[in-house]
Length: 321
Image 1 (cartoon, rainbow, N blue to C red):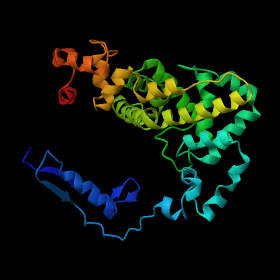
Image 2: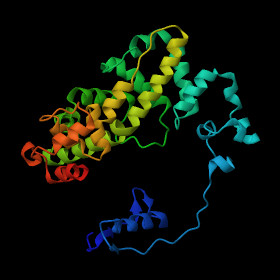
Image 3: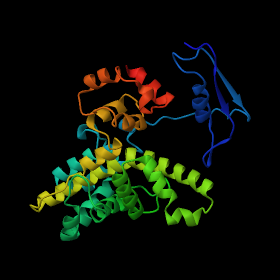
C-alpha cells in the first residue's frame, strides 16, 4: 500500500452549468483516498465549502407518490397503491404480450414505446421493407430504427453528446461499423468537410474531433444506442409477428457496438477492465476466440511490450494475470 497521499484539487464552483452542491463536493473530496492504495488523502480547494443541506430520500417502491409510470410497471400489481393503479389503468386496453415487452425494455418511456408500435403499425409495409434485417445493416436499413428511437424513446432533456438528429447518429453508427476503430473514426471526422468548415485550424480541429468522437463512443455506442436498438428490436418483432411477417433482430449489432467489435472472449477481457485499445492490439498477435482460461495462459507467455502495448495497458493485463 502506498503511504503517500493522493491529492484531489477542487478548482471550480460548478459542475457543468450547475453549482457544485454539498453532495458533489463530498463525492469529489472522497476521491482523494483509494482503498488498498493510499493511507491518506489531501484536498485543495479554492472556494468555500458548499453549505450542507437536508436531503429527503423518496423510495418510489414504498411511497409511489412521485414514481414514473415506467417504474410503477415494474412493481408487482399486489404491491401497487390505489393511486398507482389509476396511473396504469390506461394500459389495460393493450395486449398483455406487448406490456411484457414494454416491461422488459425497462427504463424507457411507456408512451414512447407505444408510439413506436403505433407508427410501425400505421406504415407496416414501409417499415417492414427496411427493418427486416440482422447482423450489420446498411444506412437505409438502420435509419428508420434509429429515427424511431430518437423521436420516441429519448427524453427532451436528455444529453445527446453533440448529436443533432437521428440521421446524424445513424450515419456515424454506419461509419463506426465500417471502420471498427475509434482512431479511424477520429481520422474520418478530422477530414470531414463539416469539421473543416467549422474549424479550419488543424490543431484545434483535431482536439475538437477527438473530444467529440470519444464522447460519441462513450455516450452512444458503449451504452445508450445498444439499449435503444434492443428495445426497438423487441417492439418490431412483436408487430411483425402479429402480422405473420418475418422480423429483424438487432441484438448482434447492439452487442458489437457495446463491445467495440471484439470477439466474445475479447468482450470478457473488457469485463476484466482491459482497455478496448489493448484488446484490439492483442487480436493482431493471438487468437481471442479461445476460452478465457486458455487466453490468459497464452498472455502469460508473450512479451506484452513487443506487441506495442503501452505501460497502462500492460499494467491492466498483468493485473488479471
